[in-house]
Image 1: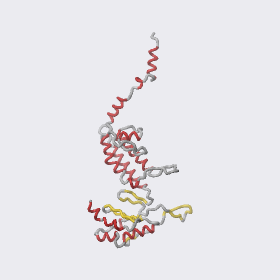
Image 2 (image 1 turned 180 degrees about the vertical axis):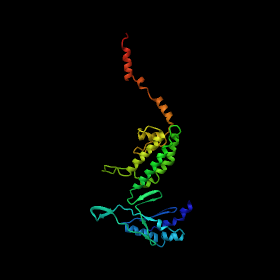
Image 3 (image 1 turned 45 degrees about the vertical axis):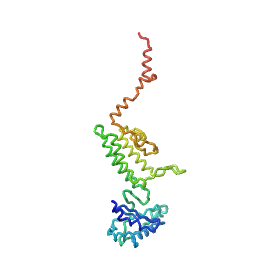
Image 4 (image 1 turned 90 degrees about the vertical axis):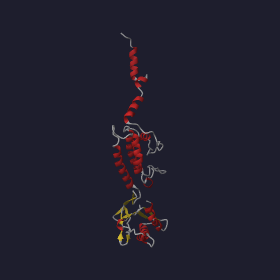
Length: 283
């Protein structure tokens, strides 16, 4: 794996200033340009590729020609322009064309790079939706392991969730997830509120499968008994709680520990009725 990483390391040297950048991982390469408008960023991208020591020359010298037909360009901006057909409306800006070696680079509205979905608004909605959909599909299959008689035990279910599910769900989360927060004077939370709510529901399904608890059990209690870090506001949930035992053992243990209220409490209605009955004179 070291050879492919070092092989295209020279591509990182094609950037000319702080408003240009190059990202690469093995054979996946992305050029980034920042500017005041889309025309400026498009010119920068073209210069990075076609200049004397640019990416096109590198590909020829290293016998690794770029497939221009597979390349795409994504114009990331939230600016809009007036709609000529609607005086009150706004429409996206016109996108300039990028032509490299006589071929027009295809423009896209969103693109997946190294497993992270990027769109023109840079709001990560597509990425959050994709993570939620994949996690939901996986967690539904994960739940099938918890059969009452022949299912996997809680300890192994917890380990499977920590070793497989969480790394898949949280992949690249530092890039697309923003912790919910409330700005001063604001009435609503900002950040990845919807994504957090969806992830909380997914983890709740996992904790129900791990603990075998009732569906009405509070989420914080499920996280604590499953030994998982809470995904909500309460982040003090212990990470390594004891693994739960099997369902039948828990039911028996609960039944043994449950107090017999009607026998121990003198004020219980049954005890009062019994006491009053003994005070009646016998005939």
